[in-house]
Image (cartoon, rainbow, N blue to C red; front, side, top):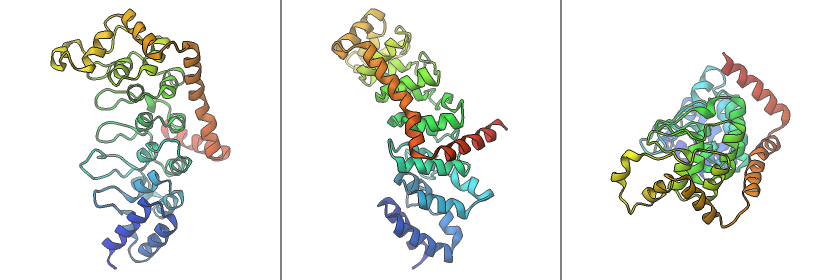
Length: 304
């Protein structure tokens, strides 16, 4: 069996989460061609390490990185996908972050960080691992990454969108509360298209997030691009939602209607509770000693 066939079998085993078989095949390939194993990609250009991370195969993740331990590990751990699709520039830590609420992916993320993965790395669209976590509502992963690299959460993508913009657009109320109340993000920041987080929530019809942002005190008279109204068309739902932002009273009335009488205090309290429970989830997924050591080492790295 040639190297290309061996690589294809390893990738197939990882995608199907058959870690024992993948490890067996990886060991066999390492005996014949170690370099091919470390540079193993699927047919579309996704590194094997990315599939290990998103599949939660922590044993194979650690094995691959241990083979390249030293200078080689730093190159391998952040090696991006070479594909030209929407995954361009993404790496293993980003894919681990996109797997919401998976303790196995969290363990892979801890291993990647221990071997030097950078929470500040950006993909072809400017998204960091924290941005990817915000998109899927992966609050424990956000807390882990923000604790290791303070300030990384403030990095914007190439369209000027913060993790808060993405969380609001995707309807993740707990992440929205965490971004504002814990990370101190600016709830009135406009992206490149002049949308605030509130504008993005309205754009994607997220009434709970709209109500939450109003209660958190964001500016209800901003958050959309007035100059582009004519290009959207009056029948476009985005245009209609933007029109409601012109008047703060209209926005408040909208919130009251869509939430259907829900208690604002209960809603805000629940969202903040979800935000703060992230730390407990992180500590439950990895031992306190491991996490504290990881935080210490990575903070020293970023302080340099």
